[in-house]
Image 1 (cartoon, helix red, strand yellow):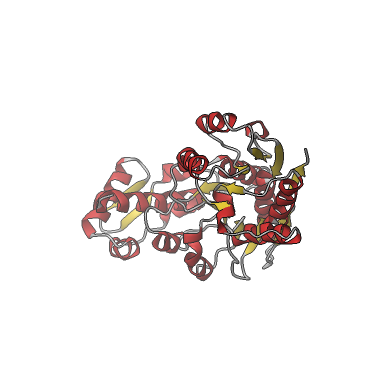
Image 2 (cartoon, one colour):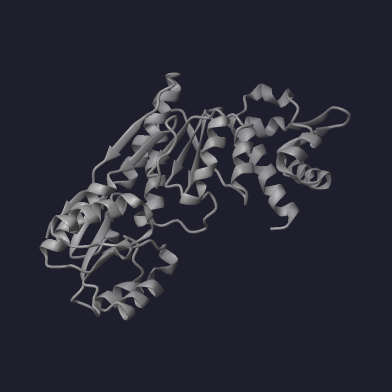
Length: 340
C-alpha cells in the first residue's frame, strides 16, 4: 500500500473505535490533534488532513474552525453505547480464514451474545506493533486473539503494556503469565491419533495442516512411537495452509510413495479429495470441527471443538472484566477421537 491508503485505513479504524465506544456526551470532546495523529500513525501532515477530510465528508467527523475536529453528533446517535471487545484472527491480516478460524469466530460471537458487549474485528494494517499501540489509545474492554501465528509472538509485550485484558485461543507457544489462555491438549491428541494409526499397521504417516506447527504435536507423536520402538522425525509433520494444500499433497504422494497414512485438515479442497481417492491404500484421519462437522472426511474422525473453545474464552473474559476481576484464566480442552 502507498502511504495514504495505509495511513487512511488506520486513522479510519481509530475513529470507528472511538465512535463505537463513545458516550453521547463525547460529541463535545475534541479529537486528537493533527500533530499527535501524525506521530501516532507515523504519517505526514498531508495524509492526516486528507484522511480527516474524507471522514468529515462521510459524516463521521465535524470540523469547527479554530476549535478542532470532533465526532459528529449524528454519528454518536446512530450507535448504542456498549463495552467493546476486539477480536484479532491469526496474524491480523489474512485475507483467507480456514474452517477452524471461522469456527472460532462463531464461538467468540456467541460468547458476546446477551452480555451487553459488542465485538469488533481488528486488523493490523501492515504493522502489528504500531496497530497494537493504536488499540491502546481506544477504550477497548479487552481483546480476544484467535489462533495467533508464530510471527506474532513478539507483540504480546506491547499488548500487556497497553493495559488491555487479553485472552488467547490456541497459541502455538507459551504466552506470558498475565495472559488468559485457552487451548487444546495437542500432545495427548497427537499421541492418541498416532496410537490408532500404529494399531492399524501404519508406520509412515504425515500430519498435514497449519495446526501442526506446534512442537507439542511432535512430542505426542514421538511419545507414542517410542512406546512401540519406532523412530520419528520432523518429517512426520507438514505445517501448510489451505491455499498450498493441494500442490503439497501432490508433491508428497509423488516423492514419498511409502507414506501409508495422512492426518488431514477439515477444509480439504476437492482436488485433494480426488488425489486421495486414487490412493485407497493410504489411511486418512480427518478433522471434524464442531461448527461445521459435515466438512470432515477420513477413515478415522477427530473432533476439534474450536467454536466451543472460543466461546469459553470470550464468555470467560467478559465475566472477569464485568466483575472487575484481575484474574487470568487458563483452560485446556481435550479432543475426542472416533475410533474405527
